[in-house]
Amino acid sequence: MTAVLFTIAAMFLGVQLGSVMLFMLRFGKQLQADQAQPRISLLRPVCGIDAFEAETLASSFQQDYPDYEVIFCVGRADDAVVPLVRRLIAAHPQISARLLVGMPGQSGNPKLDNLWKGWDAASSEWICMADSNLLLPRDYLTTLMLAWTPDTGMVSAPAIGSRVGNLGGAVEAAFLNSNQARLQFAGDSLGQGFAQGKTLFFNRKILTRAGGLQALDRFMAEDASATVAIRSLGLKVTLPPLPFEQPVGRKSLRQVWMRQLRWSRLRRDAFPGLFLCEIANGAALPTLVFAAALASAGAAPVWILAWLALWYGAEIALMRRAGWPASLRDMLVLPLRDGVMLAIWFATLRAGNVEWRGTTVSAGKAKAA
Image (cartoon, rainbow, N blue to C red; front, top):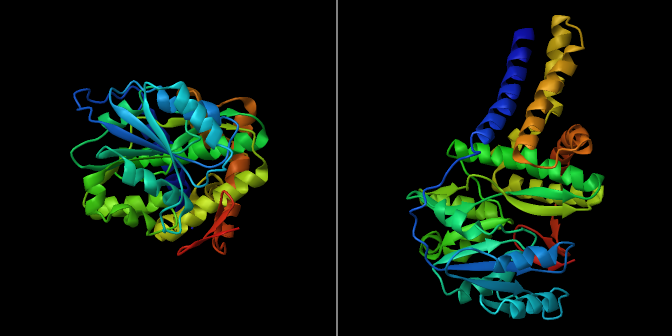
């Protein structure tokens, strides 16, 4: 039994260190620059105003891509974000941009319903959906286009959290950065890319073959649905070399809990096998296994400190190399994140509907909360 426990613990540690190494290998990766640059329609769903909304939406107009349009999609004309969007459009007359109002979709997913009109109105065969709180670098559209390969059916990318404002924001960034982004990019390096709704870049004809926008309504999350739809065509979800930035700011711990619980429930419904493995995500369960192995061998418990130093040291090295938030506070919240992650896993087993911006979403419908 002792050997079995040590073997299992070694496997957990190997996954941790291996995923860090795979991400590290992405730094300096160059994309082929001979890709064509067709017109792109950039869709940005908006709903309410976040702390960095003006800056993130303004980045839509600062692309170095030669030919693109921007389509903002909002559900209601009286939404607080509408005046801001209109001001930004007026301030950038050199960019083809417009605001579309209404919820023509009937998918049960409020974000997808909001984007539906933009998809129909887009003038390009290449369509990018980018969340409103994503800060787009100038080469954002260029990078997505260059990431497209012959066996790609969609390009996507998780976000990394920046500009942390308080403890809750640090926990949120710890989820986004050295956990979720690390694992998703490691998966992509192994040829198993998953979509993440912050960025979804499609070719209209390919998605039409997979069932069109209706195919994105198979599960509650459009990114999970997109992953399944694209893979059904024998194509891959491809990620760019590195993630894009999402300013986090200040978050309450309750906000972090509810957001992560929502995402966990969505993963559970779309990929139940993968969700079951998530009980081992983070250091909590692996450390318990290692502690049990030490006890079985009669070894000193002090070895747990060496184990944790190696486990979290690898993450911290990645955080520093990537330029992600890595202050003392950002390091100290890593064990807190892992404890919360384990609690969320158990809470997800009994979780029901999820809430998105005031809307309660179930597998088959959405209704006002």
